[in-house]
Length: 75
Image 1 (cartoon, rainbow, N blue to C red):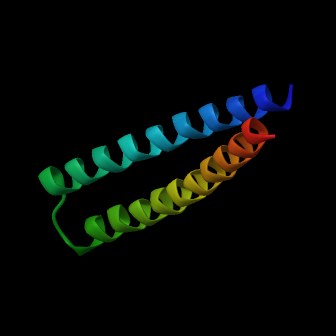
Image 2 (image 1 turned 180 degrees about the vertical axis):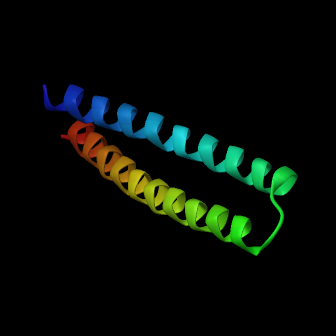
């Protein structure tokens, strides 16, 4: 039972991580192609910082779920 819960946690976190990386790529492309000026670039930079924090948190949660699955499989 716990294995399925950890697997689902890892899967959901991986999907969230994938979504954040896709969003980051889209923001970077939009920024490079469309934005000019200090204000617009500052807003885009702040948005990218928020996305990076979310991505790091998702990666940490994924690593935790992965470690738990490895422990459950070994025991």
